[in-house]
Image (cartoon, rainbow, N blue to C red; front, side):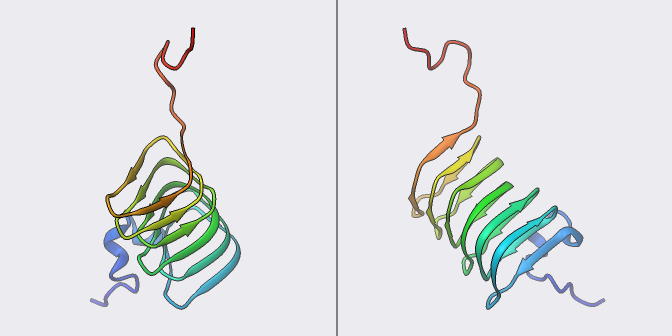
Length: 130
């Protein structure tokens, strides 16, 4: 059988049919939106609205405001980033900007400059000043 054109990224997605890849050497400037999962191995400059998982590959460079369900950064990302579920900043990543998410993982070795805003409800009585 023929190999998937998404190899080696097919293992990163729940369904290769709903996945997209911006390959090395591809540069996009402007607004990008969609409903599937996306891997960025090239460059994006602008804005990204994605209702699923966005992964910035180690070779990927994203200078954009990002709104996604989940964000995983192995490469470089700069801008305001919001994720409905979680943001992962891997050891190889460089992230500059403010992030808003209920769950965040910043691995040892990652470079992060910005603010973290956790969108979580605090238990009753926590955070109140008398």
